Structure formats: C-alpha cells, structure tokens
Amino acid sequence: MMMSGRIRPPPIGERTTSHRTRAGKIPSMNRRSFMQLLSGASLTAVSLMDTELGQMVGLGAGPAQAQSKPGVLRVAMTAADIPLTTGQPSQGAEGIRFMGITLYDGLTRWDLSKADQAAQVIPDLAESWTVNPQDQKVWTFKLRKGVKFHDGSDFNADAVVWNFDKLMKPDAPQFDQAQSNQAASYDANIASWRKIDDYTVEIATKRVDAVLIYNLAGLFMSSPKRWEEVGKDWAKFAEKPSGTGPWILESFKPRERAELVRNTEHWDKTRIPKSERLILLPMPDANTRVAALLSGQVDWIEAPPPDAVPRLKSQKMQIVTNLYPHIWPYQLSYLEDSPFKDIRIRKAANLAIDRDGIVKMLGGLAAPAKGMVDEKHPWFGKPTFEIKYDPEGAKKLLKDAGYGPDKPVKAKFIISPSGSGQMQPLPMNEFIKENFKDVGIDLEFEVLDWEALRARRRLGAWAPENKGRHGINNSWAYWDPDIGLIGTAASFAKVPGGFNWGDFNDAKTDELSTKAKAAFDPVEQNKILAELHSHLVDQAMWIWVVHDLNPRALRPNVKGFVQAQSWFQDLTPVSVT
Image (cartoon, helix red, strand yellow):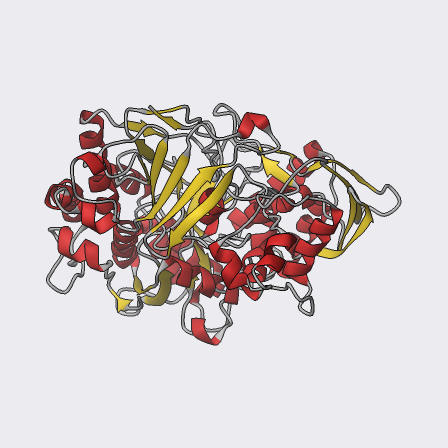
C-alpha cells in the first residue's frame, strides 16, 4: 500500500474506526481534539467486530471453535504476513520471534528466561568460543554434539559452512538471495569461514569485532539434507522447513496462519515446549487483534492499543509489560536534498515533539526518549543536547536556519500502518505531524506495508525508490552495540551491510565506533559506547520519540510466560490450561 499525504490506514481500519472520514483519512485537528477522539475509538471498533472475527481469522465462527483449547497457543501477530520460513525470517524482529527462534537455532542465542535483567547472549549450537590473541579477527567455535535437525540429520561443522555459504557465497548451489537479504545486517563483517574438524569451525571477521557473538544469534541453521530432499528448491523447503529448534512447522498459508508443533526431540530438554501446538495469525490491525482476544479466537495478542487496555483488564485479560531495548524514532537522510543536513533543523524537530502527550495517548505504555537508549542504560553517557518539548526553542532554531511561518521546512517520511515494534504508528505519526506544523515543519507521509518499508530501509536513502524521502519511521532496538549504535551511525556501516540508512558521516563517530568494536572488555566497551551515544545525541543524528514498554495481552488461562527484557521472547515455557 502506498500513499502520500495524510495517513491512510488499511481497509479493516477504514471500516472499523469511527472517527475517520469517508476517504479513510484522519481529519486535521488540534492535539487535544485528536486525543479525545482517539479515546474509545478502538472499543467501538472492537464491539462492531466481535461477531465477525471467526471468519476473518479463519478459525471458524462457532462458539465451540472460539474457545481456548488446552495445549494449543494461538497468537495474533502485528505482521501482515507469515514470516519467511526457510531460516532467515522476514518481518523484522517479530519474524525472528515467531519464525526464527521457534524453528531454528543459531551458534549463539539470547537468554530469554529472566524478566528482571537485560537479556544476554549465551552459547547455543556452539558450546564455546575463543579469539586468537595474535589475530583478534579470528574466532574458533566448538560445536555442540548430538544435535539433530527436524529431519533426523546431524548438525555439524559441514552444516555450519553450508549455511554460511547459503547466505554469503553467491556462486554456491544453495545460495538464497531472499535469506541473504534478511541476514545482511548480521553477517556483514564476516570475511571467511571454514571447517577445522567435524565439530569445530573458524570464523574470521573483516575488522576486529568484539560484538560478533551478538550477530551470530541472528544467523540460523537450516538443514542441508532437507534442501536436498526437496530438489534443492528453497520454495519447496519453505513448505517443509527443517531446523534444530524447539518447534516444527506443520503447515502454513500466506497471510492467514501457520501451525507449529513441539519438537519432543529437541537437544535442550529444558526448552521442549509446554504447548503441543502453536498457531500464528497475521493481524496488522490493532482493533482486530483485540476483538479476536475478547471473542476467544486467540489466546495472545501483540501490541494491544492502549485505549483498549481498560476493557481487556475488565475481562480478566493479562496485560504484560516490561522494559526492553527499544526506541521509536525517525531515521534521517543526510543527502543534499534533505533539510536534515542542517543540525539546527534536526534539533528543532527533536524539540518540537510533545512526548508526554504521546505517552498519555498511549495509555502510559511508553516512556519519553532522550536519545537512542534510556537514561539508565550504561551507554547513555552525558549528552549536552537535552531532548525535551520546547516548541519555542524549535521555532528559534528554525528561524536561525532561514525558515518561518511563511517558509516552513518541507519533509517527507516513510511510515507503516503496523509492524514489529511499530507500536501505534498511525495516531503517533499524526500527532507528531501536528507538533511539527505548530513550529513550522510541513510533514508529508508515504505509507507502506511493514515489509515494504523494511525493504526501503535496506536500500538506503540514496536509492531511486527513496528519492525525495527525508526520513523513515522504523522502530529500532539496541540490544547489542552494533544494532544500537555502531551500525546505525558509522560511515562503514551503510545499509544493507549495516543500518546507516541516511548516509550519516562523521569522523568522531567512526573513531569511537572502531574503538568500541576492538574493545573485548565489557567495561571498557561500555565507556566508549557512552561517549559515542553522547556524541550522537549532541548531533541529533535521528529524531527519537519514545521507548516502548512492549505490551502484550493474554487470556487468563495462558500460563508460564516470562517477559524478557528483549525484543525476542521464548514461547517454550508457555501453556494454555
């Protein structure tokens, strides 16, 4: 879906959200009126949809079919489609959450078993690793023995090499461009890989990279044997994938549903799923997800709309939140046609946003941002530019830059109607558009489906498809130094190998990023990253809005879920009683 100008939500939103105009556009209004109209809108929509959800989600309309079934966990995702099933999922972090760490394992993984501390990387298919003291670009990984793919074949060093070839060796028979695209941000700094013996592999990086183990948690191992069995055809592999993970894909239908069953033979007996079956349902519209939960069509929904939370609580639904490393920002273009090349305009945009108002609109399920990371994070540092709501300060900066009421800054941003970590992007973007208008920034939107937006992000601001677009609203994580700071800012980390979408280029940033990559001591690395973050805030590299509290709504009979401080979550302990 593409459209310029005011936000046009997807078709379901048009027919269910009562305050939209006939054309599906949010009418122009002041912030107070907008917030008043937003309140209660989702509840009205939910009431209208309760009777129709059975057919819409494909689970049947009869009352008996709408009830929870012990042993079956039904999840409504924010994604509009089933993530890619071949090994490297699409649909961003949500794809990894539901179709990555479910079906597959990596050499390392995130420990998602704790709610009271930030998730850490731990061994997974690799039991241990060492770094060559003479050449810190060379790593040796000892692999876990006795691990089987879902098809019964052995996981070993040959499988690791085969999978790396699948992603990074274009002339390999098994090379898959679709998976390579999804993995590009994780494998960009890997230079070479080789088998030492059946259970030992060596990986060399292009530059010294102390954060390699974080990136390896995002590279998943598919079965070479299954690929051979299906005629060396990734499209057929997608229908019958084979990994080593705790779940096995039984069937899926694009844009409708996927059914997974537990892997009773998983090598880690503590992670054999408590539920017998996991059903994933794409539901990008927030009101549809709420109605599905209230009518008994699903047991779990991602990102419930804040104004629906009181009703959900009144119906005894569990509302689960936790801190996690996430920011809702605008990544900015630094090309010649972008007004954001001027630091005064970048700072003005950051000062123009009423973040407390957005938090109130979101029912308290967010926290105002003062940079990429939260203030308590060890990487926050001591920036001198304070990000706050200061419209008069924003106006002064814009005036100094040559803009005013008769000459507003004109900018165009790419946004999406939903997606992994996107929170409530339509009302949030409309709110910010009104904030910008108040100070003299005329903001226009191009609305794309979430996966289409991600494809535009991987192309970079300089791509022909992104010409005339000055920012992109892509929710972001900071679970490791690369994705959080280095990969977003360093000039050597341009997309698709890194995350630098807008071609930000700054000598001090590159110097600090290189130092952080070479710091294997966590304490030393944190100090460097704090200095880097302070500098990026002072440069107003992005427009940072709010941190998400990662809300989910679960039916009362869903038990065992531990909400990790992570973008990812482990579904293996969850049961439906």
